[in-house]
Image (tube, rainbow over the protein chains, first blue to last red):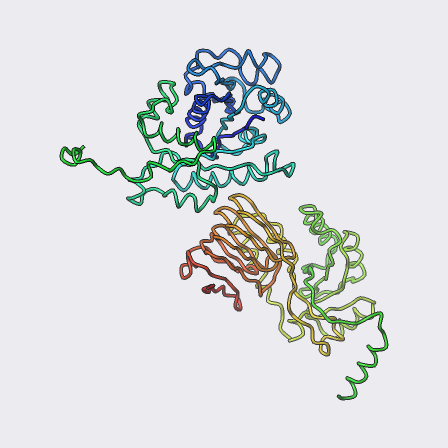
Length: 269
Length: 279
């Protein structure tokens, strides 16, 4: 049985697509068969972050309308063969998706893949609802900032009431908190909510804390998901997320301000 | 034991299959502001259209408090029954002759607790409720409803009221919600207390006709005694609410400084909310 995981947040710009790409690639690097689906119809981004934007021929909406088969639309990743991307359509809007036809596509994908990662659009409208409807698990991407936390809280309410699992009275969607753009220094200065603050408000298990990092922007522009940058703290933090998703217990890193080394203290680095 | 008690005892002992008891209920009261029944019908129909299920077969007492002109009582009864209410009787502070007239027509006349003590209804609860509705900008059904029908706990019917001591305790059962109530969610315990085992997030709303208990942090809105229960209280393990309201009297977070971020409960004394340390 494929695990259907939605990466969602309510608020835009918090790192849903970056996280989807990193997590999808990370799971595939561990030998899992993974498909990444871009649910942001009309605002296609995942292909850019994955670096496959020049290979998009058919898209999700073409498949739904029967204009292409799944195999025609899926783009196989050049770095890891067990990873595929199903791009969004840039020319349509979110009404192109319905519960029935999305369900059919997911069922079909579930026959081949171990993980189906649904990259949700921002908001709480039809597009976001469609992305979370069939999910078994949800990665709620949140920035340590009050408005993002409130929007995450809202989407958690939706997960508990508007999903297929909620409608059928099945076991609820497993919720994970992914805190992104975390800056221990700003937390220490009292400018940013701490991990504990966010956990207290949302009260769901913490999956990972991704530190604010220059590497993320660089990776996005290069179309190389940041998890490939094993030198960077963000890349390592995503690696820990993968291990936790696969059932390992890993200590949280990058929660404290780094102790300055003797050199940087002397040279003011 | 005096003679009257003796008499009552023998009276009730004689019937084992039935027993008379005095108790109090919360009933909807329709406040008539006009004797033009065509207008009343039009307004009432509009109101019902907003929430048909809510009003269907609701027991209704018609208050003639504000009516000075003569009124066709029979027509009023037929009108509310036609609109699918269950007609109970008339109420209001009126003179003895008018009360007598109503009884002679074959209708119950119900004295409110306030009318019994000779105090006129102030309509205060009504205006404060309307204020909340305006201030919060919400279209909650019951706050909205307060503009046509205030709900008043009534004592037992006129004749027996002085003799039978009626317990004034409102008996609410509990609605229990397990898990957090998230931003944007609304939970209403109609005719019940609400017990939340979990936190109420900012932007969420919990409402009960009775008390509200939150075993967690209260960060959203809590509205207790929503249909006019003065004794309702709000308890929480951590008070960080956006708004608390009891029987239409409300506080915004700025009024909660004293017990902010600590276990507290809110109750209503006269028309003032007060907060107290919980533990």
